[in-house]
Image 1: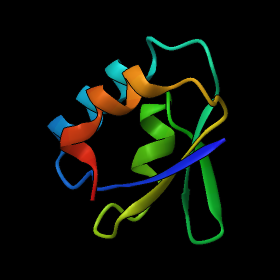
Image 2: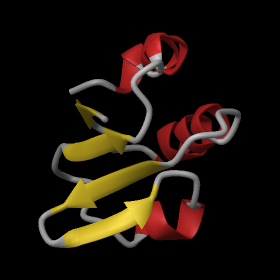
Image 3: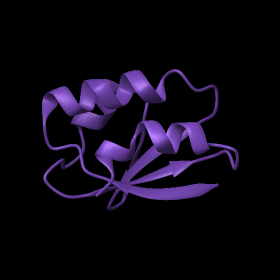
Image 4: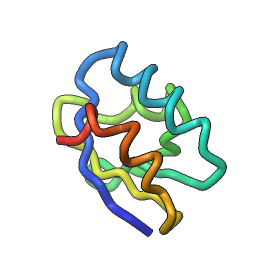
Length: 75
């Protein structure tokens, strides 16, 4: 498992982020405080406080391609 902090402050960023993460077969969660949502769910992400950085948990060790694609969203 890998953990990365991301910032998704704009609506366009959330859609682009979900499009990228959805292309990968492994599970990815976003954690904000005590809330955890599926990173492939638009509605789930919009239920989080997007004004703060969010912790992204990737349940795959071989995820270098994903990490490169989300470089623009890293906090």
